[in-house]
Amino acid sequence: QAKSAGRNQYCFYQSSSGQQSDQELRLEQALRTALQQRQLQVAYQPKVALAEDRLVGFEALVRWHDPQLGQISPVNFIPLAEKLGLISQLGAQVLELVCMDIRQGGLAEVPVSVNISTSQLSESDFFHRTCHILNQHGVSAQRIELELTESCLIPEHAEETLVLLTRLRQVGFKLSIDDFGTGYSSLSYLRRLPIDTLKIDRSFIDELPDNREAGQIASAVIAMAKALNLEVVAEGIENTAQYDYLLSAGCQVGQGYFYCPPLSARDPALKNFIGRHCKGKRLAHNESQF
Ligand code: C2E
Ligand code: MG
Ligand code: MG
Ligand code: MG
Image (spheres, rainbow, N blue to C red):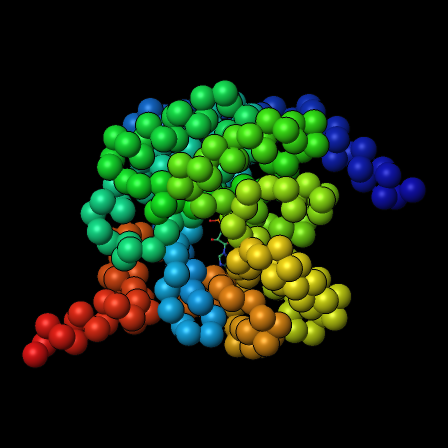
């Protein structure tokens, strides 16, 4: 009974508190300004082949620092951008920044993953808009991987989605399913999708190696990816125990603070990481010393 009273109180607080909506309004206005003035930035987190300790890609993650409100997490402003119908504009700006950083040459020669919201994917001009940005910057689609979530794969639009993903893949984009294991995509549908990669959600990695269930889920996803001939990436690896578990379970690729946090393309720490994990680069560097 105390619980339900608490719940009611919470609802009451939410619906009638002017402060809450004031705050939301400020955030909304700040986001519109950030998009108009192109204040968003992108951080890059390396993806590493676990066995060889070799850099195989980056994930691009949007960053927003508002002069008044400070650093705001994408967990908070991505849903807001979706709600306000601004997600396509935001996604376009992120892709442009990624293309510019690729052209600057600071991201080695590996693919860069970009997160795509479900509502972005369902915009009718997504395909053309995306290709147009790449063409404008002279970036090949082979350099870009699109990270979709299972919610992109809603059954009502299964056929349309299949057509769109097939087109994207035909022009060279790689496709991956992010946060895999948290949604409920049917395995028979998954099998038909033209995808390259499954990313095991961080919530399972978090509980490795002690939680048996999380371990079994991770191992099952890895086995299934193998069976479907997909690459498997573990996100959010933070320590050696998690690394060891994933390596022996046959996971190929990982990312997480264990390796490197998301960093600006201009951060010397990222350049340093690339130098230490990009074998081709290190060879070239050694050669230049002779
Ligand atoms: P995600 O795509 O699953 O990204 C992984 C998140 O885990 C990132 O959070 C990353 O910073 C964080 N992370 C990486 N390694 C570790 C680790 O070892 N430990 C822990 N605890 N966390 C780690 P971030 O940057 O806050 O992004 C959150 C979510 O926001 C992303 O989840 C993605 O769904 C969304 N997002 C980020 N950038 C974009 C974007 O440009 N467009 C769209 N549509 N969504 C984005
Ligand atoms: Mg992602
Ligand atoms: Mg993820
Ligand atoms: Mg996740």
